[in-house]
Length: 229
Length: 229
DNA sequence: TGACAAAGTGTTTACTCTACACTAATTAAT
DNA sequence: ATTAATTAGTGTAGAGTAAACACTTTGTCA
Image (cartoon, rainbow over the protein chains, first blue to last red):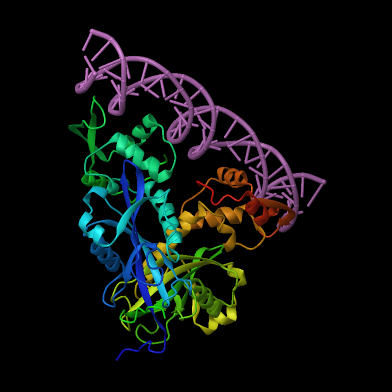
């Protein structure tokens, strides 16, 4: 028989999800209004407890799916938050994850059921517990990640214009970018396909649509790039 | 009375520490020989369980102190490892931390008592469970961290030569660096003080000793720099 | 057909990074 | 005292990258 660790303390482990979305108003986070005490009615990240028979990644995926109905979403583990008094109800350690979703795909019904709402990151309410810290971590990580991996496309529709991509990066990095320099840097990554199709909504001339070419990117098998915007 | 989360699963949470040291042979990791089953006699990271009344940072600090006797050591949380079957004894989630210590300061007695040994990172034994993954994560994080924060000095004696610093960065990044370019990049950070004191051990001419000027660095209050070596 | 609105497109300049080799200082040996 | 040996210490030129910058094109709607 194996040894056991029976004399050690066990604790509650939860996951909390920072869910990013993007639309023409900017970079947004999906929050829910907490419907139980303490802090009932306050805004909160979406979270849930780890079950004994699942990994943290599974738990995060499950929680995200539960609230949004989405699957196959880009998620990344951020950090474990563990201050002793972080949750007044019980000793709980929470592992924060962030997710990038295409804001158009989310299930509005589900979100309404949970009293969820999108908030622009520059205009967020105060959140419960240490969730503000988690969000700050997530934004930092997302900024860094965009410079090393092609994660931006996760936040856009499958087909998007250069302008949308530019505005996305401006929202993530919170700074203005030069259009021509941006386009040439993106093109030098050589991971987009330009479609023979135009988006006619934003201008009379119409602007070409692009797609992220995942196969071309994977074929390069570079673990990460250095995109300095 | 507060609500409770009483229906939720509780789990064991541990911390595992990747302890880096540096000497003239290169970058090293401190490992212990596990003295209980399963995997008795195999090499392992130093770890311990989180107690209910401490944060993960405290637990990591406590574990490090327990094995090495050291305090006030640079530590950083890496990642939570949570595959369901990662520990065959019991369901345990482990949060990995890495620590940077001055190899000369460690308490040799303590380390002997625990059957601990330093291994060059290029010449490490296979470790138990998922500890090899943890080490790989730690090395990646350390490489990145050296480009944004002045962490290298944690691995050196208080006074060090430019050559030592160069060799440290070469060991961390696993690549040869040009001496003149390296020195000018380091100097441009403007965070070292050159002492009126030479190290006479490595050459007849003797080479100047430097110290990290923490006050000057803090005064700049830049959260991070970009050191591209 | 003219006004409008956004799309699309290159070049010059400044800066940063890289490659590269000799002299200086000191001690040990003869 | 001279020489040999060893590592320390130092600068520049060229290449490459990043930044700044403005006009023309296209199509629709009035």
